[in-house]
Image 1 (spheres, rainbow over the protein chains, first blue to last red):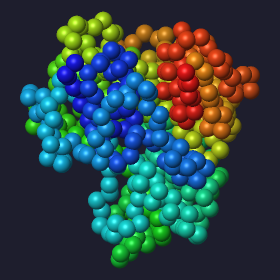
Image 2 (spheres, each protein chain N blue to C red):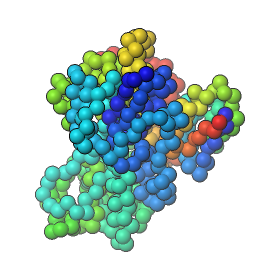
Image 3 (cartoon, rainbow over the protein chains, first blue to last red):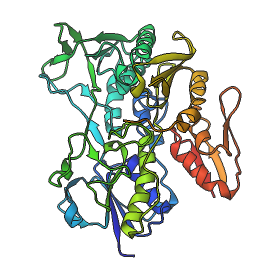
Image 4 (cartoon, chains in turn red, green):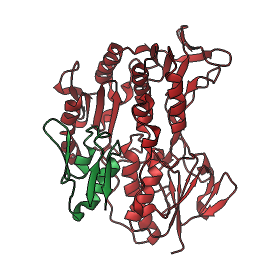
Length: 402
Length: 62
């Protein structure tokens, strides 16, 4: 069959999409295009085990399924434009390639701070190359580290920096508590205490106004006038969707790529989006399209989108129910783990301790309209296992109405 | 089909148990136990379990 699906993006979401195309019966060609020079690899350890030196960088590579052994990999190549009406994508090496089906999997890149000051010494954590550079900086003796942004990556990097023996580690965030967005106040406060007990300092409720130093950063200036001395700065202030190549196709690219309930883009049968770039409605919840940056999403979206696309190209239609994944996330920090099931963010107004207590292993429930919509465990393995026992209940619940 | 789990990588996330409950389970102390030679009828389940393992510790052979 002389037909081709192009997968724009060759990270986890791209790989999983290619594998799921084969599982869905696609026998035509598959071309994956990715701007990194590496084959797809697993990113979560970049802020944890691999940054800490407990696992080698080589251990991150995914093992592609045998079914995609014949896929064509265009690595170190960036997709720079698309003309969806003509079924053409263009690469940074000047080539234009026509496709029968297109999978949007170009993901995110770290958002950068724009305030004045030197760039050298300021790190982000997204790629293997980022993590290698940061590890070198963190393992220099006596490093003073300032982490800007107290979200998932910021909290994980701060914990790893302490474990690596950094002299000072300070997390700066304009919000009053770390990870308060995904966790809500009750658990975020418990998280703050645990970090402080393990040597992480916090400058909360204040933003960064600039960086001091000539060639290399020497300090971080805060909105309240203080300057934190710093040899290493980590910017973990969220991410930006890599959508520029889709400009000019009439899509609303203000926050990722909008899809319908089957992950189709722009109402087309031949274009789908997967991974953290996809802004999809989750039929399990309120139908509001959202991007989700959890690790499980590339695999979940790939499975659904591949079936949608293969059916769309074959014009056979499909009887899939609308996409309705149960979100899960975890985060390892110091000697404890956060483990979540469901959508705690939709139930932050009604938070209750379900098991244990906030000083030890604890499972917290998040409720909307009196109903449990998410659980998060904080603590050791027993807490995570206890949280997982709520998963079946969360799966069984009928959809929330908007 | 043979299932191999790299127990040096495994961190007891338990995602494999949700994906393939006939093959993977958690023992009473919360640690992973699994059937190393499940029948071929369970291949899809095991492939899914391998996909969802956060540490990518599960491998299928044969």
